[in-house]
Length: 354
Image (cartoon, one colour):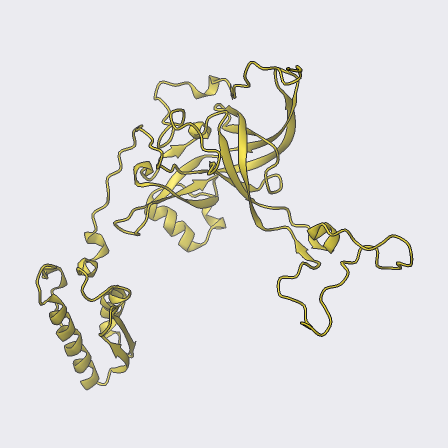
């Protein structure tokens, strides 16, 4: 069957009718050859779904190309999806600084948690600090509305040898033309915040003084009781209590409902779950070593990956943020850059004011 799909005009009124006739001819021809068993054929309604059970490899291209593209598309919609993926033009993204709008959404970064420490500011106040290392972040894939239907950037972090990756993972990096990465993460962005594949991202993507949201996997603590896992009060220590001091107590009622409700807080596995800490204050960044100091705790153990993005609630001043990211000047000596510290203000927090 020779069906010149690429030569069809999407504006032709009888295009859907021609599509129906071509599929019916292919179906009748294959049924005559007894190479095909038709299980279901529905071409009515708002959506088109065709399912063929092929016993011959002669129609493998049709099953993978045409049939897969007909799914989830309305009949009366333009048939631009019939063209090959190669025909979709790749968007040219110009990596240059631009102006950020209130509706713009930048990409995030992947960092490694180095541990916790404490610093004292110029007023002598102690600040608990978590140190994060932004290890060689790079844009490994770009998703655009023309191809995937949405805007997103896939960021890769770290380095890894090909022998420690699966063949599909190695093929993904080879197809994008980027180095092998240890960790990948996709960040949804707006259309004006897209970056080309291979763009390097550093710690100056964020600025001191802004707030960020940090996501990570909490430490696994194994099987724990109700007092530690959920903060239950526990049973009495005396007055007749025996061997049940840390018990959770009653788990249900009597005849009504006569069962334990689903979702009841009980002993079980604790930790090892994804958690997000919101509105974390960035105290200091070190461009020379790609380190970031943030105030407070960050979920996860030392050495775990965490994902950093602009805070949703405590939105930063868009005039201070590099958009879509910070581009390092060619003549800049990154090894001799000094750390940048957030401004603490001129009011002494230990002075009593009226």
